Length: 100
Image 1 (tube, helix red, strand yellow):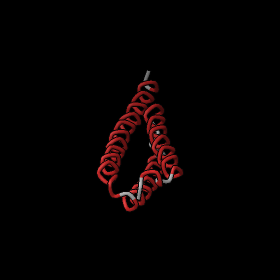
Image 2: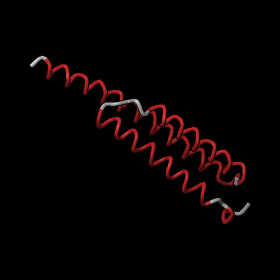
Image 3: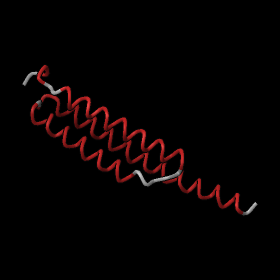
């Protein structure tokens, strides 16, 4: 398959999912609420499905897709770690305020 045949809908969907993941993790860090992690996991599954479809249709992109998929996984892992620490930080702030 030629790259001209690449489904633009899939590309736009991927961008939407990736930006949504970024926003959820940024919000989680800002407010110390990790309840969005399950949504992040669902979005990651959706990106994986699209990546698999593109890899099957365009084997010449497989290496780049693997790299992007790994980058997203690393972003999610780091974002979750940071947000979890943000949650702990916000808890500590509240405990400090109560004891003042």
